[in-house]
Image (cartoon, rainbow, N blue to C red):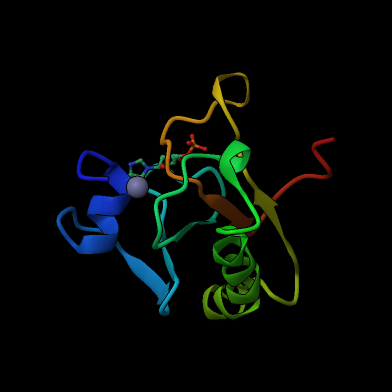
Length: 113
Ligand code: AMP
Ligand code: ZN
């Protein structure tokens, strides 16, 4: 999608601080971190939100989950733990409509649910 912020970040048209990349996944530091370690993980294919996951494109989401252990280790939160968050739609506060998963780690409180 030509006007999608995260597609532009993936293509390098907008700068980002990359922490991990493979054939299907790109991960970078959130510009407004909500935790000491706050990484945004996106599929390289444009999927708008969790509402748009299908049997045809779900391998992109699986690739994200497969990348999570590597990313957690890279930023040093694999041992102490972290939270993975996906916001879907306006009531969840989704602001960028290219599906993404927040990895939040560091000094955090307890559970949110
Ligand atoms: P969400 O609110 O769940 O849609 O998450 C979108 C996230 O993208 C927010 O946490 C923003 O801070 C983050 N964000 C927006 N623009 C950029 C950018 N240029 N580089 C890194 N993170 C960004
Ligand atoms: Zn996109």
